[in-house]
Length: 118
Image 1 (cartoon, helix red, strand yellow):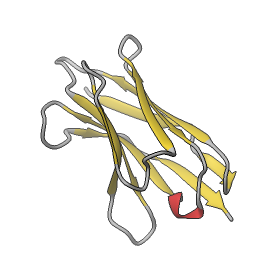
Image 2 (cartoon, rainbow, N blue to C red):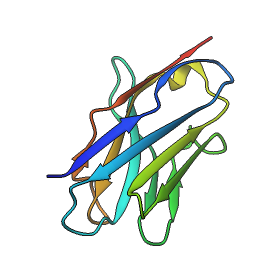
Image 3 (cartoon, helix red, strand yellow):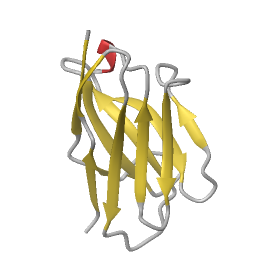
């Protein structure tokens, strides 16, 4: 059974940093990509960043470029999101996702809350 478990969320002041982690387990087949999404209250879930599992090719939403960095540890099946220069508008529940192909995502974590105070 596929399981994605996020951690590292919390309360931080604007301008601060957080590092989110996602532990992946239960895969019986290869991973193509991993990603982070977020959902703020009253808004739809939105893409933040992704990374391909083999080549490590990254992709970022415009709001994340220059401030967030996605990385991975293939051996440990971990994915990270380093978030710097946080803004109040970054406040959201952050979700880890796994994709087994180029398009779409197959599995989601339960989310971790990030709150940025002004």
